[in-house]
Each structure stands twice: as structure tokens, then as C-alpha cells.
Length: 331
Image (cartoon, rainbow, N blue to C red; front, side, top):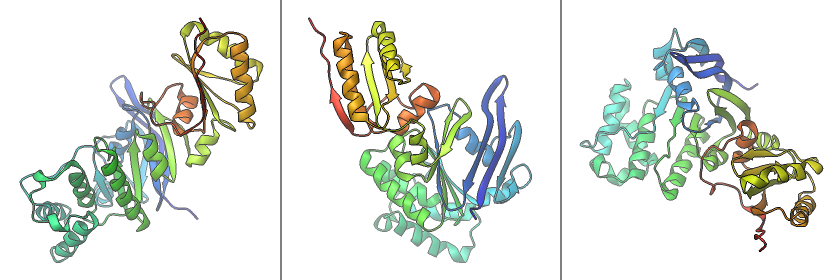
């Protein structure tokens, strides 16, 4: 039977008249990588801060390993390693000294500290740099040091709040590899992110959050199934032509989601044939579109389906397109 290592029920957090968390319900299973996916300001970090006791909930309950966060917060903190968005290392100290310092702050037994520190340096691939000042490290090296520092007290739970923000692709991929390795050792990982590919690559289950509300929870496959069967149609058009395109799609029993100048919809099981029918119909009716494409469902498509908006403004995170065609404006 799957054990819930974190249980959150009807969690509400208000700041004056503003509701940051609005009845959040979620469970994190022991040993999984659980993702909180949503845009900036969605409530991801607020959930983490409530779990850690850094913020007091307005109402609702939070249990970590069966412990109530309003009664046993010190025990809960000892059970959690935390890596924040910002790198928090002492620049004037060496990597080894940083780890020794935080081991003492986490009250690790003195006789265990040397072994823990050496193991952490190995895990971060920083053995050769153990006696080098952390302030001279690259951003990727500092994030690796930050990761192992958060685990120096050997907690069963690791919380990563936007851990790869600001990293290039190579360093981001390297950090993913180390997160996977920790999870394989039995560590439960809670990851907050706005990177679609990060959630897709790392998470066993994902909660999609927007404006303080959980919109859906499931595996990547389960969430993508919410979009519908088949591939996803995407059309970019001028505002004056949007209504005509939506009406055309309705004739094929296709419900569209409109966001600004973009239309998205599920093409159903026979995606290739439906895509051809739609492009032909658009040409026949002389409707002008700027671009039309079909691709496999992505987490961005899920987010659009559930909220009507995109997680990020970037369009470079969609899966590889199955088909891309451009209909040029006829003179």
C-alpha cells in the first residue's frame, strides 16, 4: 500500500484580502518525485513555506510523516532538506567548509560530519574543489553544492523550489541527473517548477496549480489524456478570423480553446485525416491563418485546457511537431 508522506487538506492561505491558496488538497507518496507545476505567483512556493512552517496557514491541515505542522514543526524541519531558488552558500568558505557549517547547523553528530562531507563532495562531483572557495565556482557548481548541502543531515524528504532557474541547458541536465540519483536512493522529492520539460523529465506525478487552486493531479500520461485523444491542433490567426475558425471546428465536433491569437484543440483518434480536412476547409473558405500545426500533447496543452492560459510565454517548449504547414495570405 502506498504511504502518504505529506498530506495537505483544504489548505487556505490569505494575505489580507488576497487568497494565495484556495482549498488545496494533495498527497505526496513516499519515494516519488512529486511536481508542483504552474506559473510565477500560482502558489507553489506558498505551499512549500506553509509545509515548512515559514508561513502559518489560514485554515486547513498539513501532515508530514504523520506529524501536524502546527504542533511538530521542528521535527518536520529535521525531516526535510530544502533547496531554494536562490543559491545560499558562504562565498568566502570552501566547499568543504560550507558543508561542515551546515552539518553543524543541522545538528549532525560531530563524529559523522567528516564522512557526510566527503560523500557530499563526491555526489556533487566537487572532490577536486573541496578546498576551493565557493565564491569562485560557476553557477552550475554552486547549485550542485547547494543540492548536497540541503541533504547533509540525511533527511527522507527533499524539497526543490525552482532548482534550475537561471541555469543553462547543460547544467540543468546535470542537476536533473543528480536529483534522479537521490530519488533512486529512496528520497522523496517535491519539485516546484515552471519548466514543462523539467516536470515531464523528473516527476512521477504532477499537480497543476494556478491562482492558488489545484487544477489536476496525475502522472504525465494521465494529465496529457485530459487534452483528449490524438494530436493537438494549433492555429495562429488574426483576431478578426478567430470566430470563423472556431465555428468551422465546431462543424467537426471539435471544441477549441482560444487564447489571444492562438486556437488549440484535440484532433481525436484519426488526427492525420482530421488535420487534412481542417486545412482543406480553411483554404476552401479562404480564411486567412498565420500558421497551423499539429503536435503530440504536451503539459502546456494540459495547462491551456485547464486554465485557458500558458505556463510560460515561450513557445519553444512544445514537443516535436507531427506536421507543420503555413497558409500564406492570398493576394
